[in-house]
Image (spheres, rainbow, N blue to C red):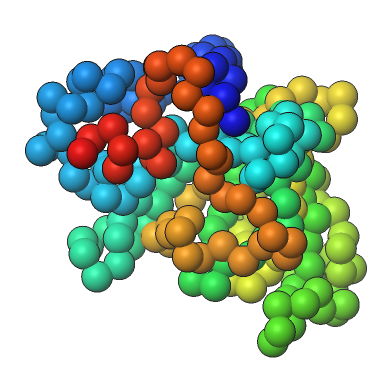
Length: 225
């Protein structure tokens, strides 16, 4: 992805978050120089990968297959005491986050407003293939089930609890507008806890055609050396 595209996505995201009155912490708006000046006081942020996270999953087309995320809080197993994480995401109409599950993380995915979020579900078997049994889950504490590959549509205010090993793929429903999506979960580890059904690139390779407006979580190691 080009840095100019990433910068535009961030600016569009800030506008949508403001429209929905969802507010980020002050450090979200720092530029590279402010990060360098505060490097010694922000280890939890950089070590636990809090902040801006934009990916096209290696597709080359962010709006067809991609996701905007901002990790607000996150622990790190064996390092600190925080056992939970929280993210805010923006999902465009028909913008796919590819099928995947987590080995360790259990999570609630919440429609915080905007359009409708469509989630397709499969159980996984012992070899990480699709299991063809029905998927049993809860939405806001209510037991539900769908056939293997079935779709769940979350309208604003609704949530789904996804247990470990449950494959899920999601996107915004056609004609309903972009979706503000929350995630509340156990500790998040995007480096080792994502099992994608098909091989994808979780973090983008960036063509630095202009300076970053804000650092991504993948930028910390390079810019804050």
